[in-house]
Image (cartoon, rainbow, N blue to C red; front, side):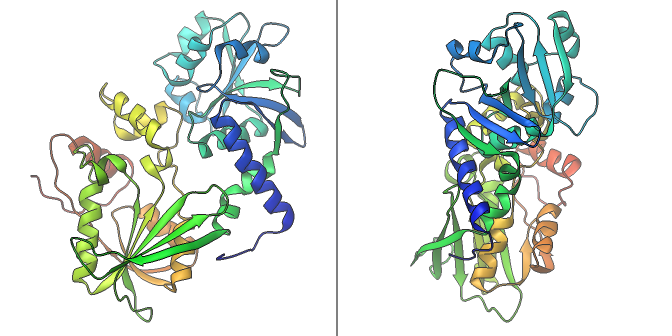
Length: 370
């Protein structure tokens, strides 16, 4: 165990969040409570149509909690707070799914009798839970703790959800290591780190013999199954992965951290949903926001913990993303320099790379057109 800087109450709360994630992903409702009360939430994408009646009030109202990003897509007023969309008449699960992910305008909602209001902090916490579960961040809400399906439900505190990312990063385990020769370099060792909570596994790739006494090249690489494994032409991930390994080997040694954060943290299923939206003309950031996600859902606390465990506090970061520089600096990893990464541009990834540069603030690596 790398660290145990959380107390017993925090550990119990983190375990409750873990279990709540499990419940949501399997279509079961969970209770979220704060100082103002308790409400029941269920994932709109995992809800059985027959269970929608359990989330309908006696007055016939169904409440859907959505993120501010999704609200902006629907044309709601600018806000940093989530929204509750309530329909005061009978509705279907499909209409709620359309509201959560489809192309709907605010005027259409008014015509259909929907009313919009700001969500409370409890609703905001529940949406974070859906994000951790890598589900579409849209939840049906039932105020109070009335029965749904006659089943007992797991209850989790909003404060537990808020503290979850920190607790995860403080409970990381180094579980195995082995030397694995790669095509770009045979002098390579792989170390697997596992989250005690969340159970994700991250990989540290030690290339050559990096010297802890001097800043070494480090690459933080988020998993991309389509790019890294299938050589997709829609992104530059596979080229950046292989290029980083080769550059680190040429530099005499360094580290590549392969982080389990597919699709900038939204997961593989949602990444493919975003790809489908890109086919309709949205750029990569617009597509994620259309689904209710932030432009980037990743968290680099795990990377900081891994680097500190390996004994590297001063590094040269291989990246075009200034957010990574800021994230490492915030957790006391000194980034003494940046090494840009370039990749070939083709007809399939040109708009993706342009969106990262023009709308996400990525630095131009000077990639050449292929």
